[in-house]
Image (cartoon, rainbow, N blue to C red; front, side):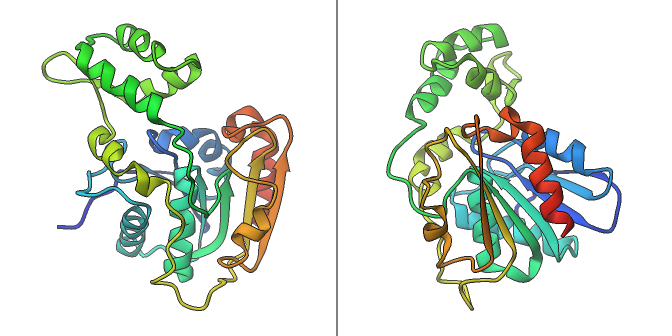
Length: 262
């Protein structure tokens, strides 16, 4: 049985936009982009596998997620789409573009590189998420307190709590597949695979938007992308880190609007 993705579709128009969120998130996390674009586009906010209300996979991987998104697009006869991905969602979008370029008209990548990452940035988050379950927290306030014992940034704890729910036992649990994401975390750090690809570098017009204060995307971005994407433009947003679409919302939205309108 094929894995089912939970997708919220809004807006109107002949142009389809597919939004792919980052690790520990859901389709709601790119809501600012969806609300801005839905006046002129049909916007599909996807819960990636192992996240939100989508099915969980036996193994978590960028390639597996890309295949699930491609299967969903095939089922809904979506081609020639604009695909926008942030962080993990950006890697999934890149893998989708490499595997199935005919599905994508324009590609927007928000603050992520196609290269493999060696730094484990999320171990303290996994520790906090597991601690919430171990503590048997019954309220979001209690869960937040547990998270903040492991996570310095309150806004990160609040972001994680958008994926919290109360289970049948009255305990706080997570909608994302915590155990599998932790077990396969190395797969989340891996680079884009090319064994399925043909005709690289692909010529999909692609825009990389990086935060000037983010450590995720080096200044040598074009070199990192060159073997995969031949029609690439890179823009750096000042006074923004990894969450650039929230820190400099109007700037990022303006870049996206202009790019996908071409």
